[in-house]
Length: 245
Image 1 (cartoon, rainbow, N blue to C red):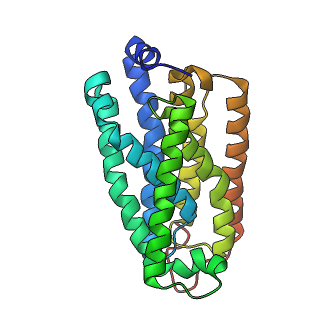
Image 2: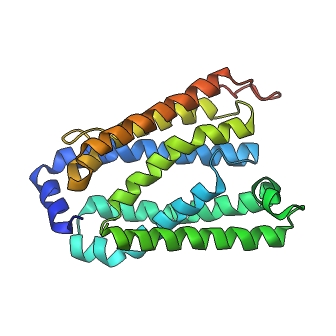
């Protein structure tokens, strides 16, 4: 698929550009996730599906477990910073699981269990879901030969762009952070799929420098726009004066 040496050769060839592209891409990803967590805490319902959190937990935990690779094999500060960020996000995902079990367990699992979900059942299904997310991410990474997790890291942004508008429709109203999340999602999607020389992923990962990646980016961008269109057309949640943010 690609090698660490290939990626790092590109990084060292133009370090400033690689770092700038990385920070522009990751800044919007960070903004998306912080906004989603604020929405979950404030509204007691996450703007992401539970299975998305499970997949993101798989990404963050896998990236965190590759400590030796980042600090010994590669030993480049950008990836060490990303490692620290992923460690922090493992904690954030566990916090999200706590909120999901406490406030959303019926929304998430009642349609499958056909009865009110107890706290214990919520924890059991939640932990199994997170374990499955980690297992799938870890095994798919090995199967793809995605040594630096960058192809599957890109997938987290693509999944968010494709899925989040459907979750918004299920939520049924524009809440605090809805519009902000939409703009961050659109911007993050665009930066994720920029072509070689402009975008972090297409520049560093040779297999992503292709027409299929461009087409995927167009599709994801259209779905990110769909989220904003739906959000602006939705009624605001009553009783909140800042839901249009």
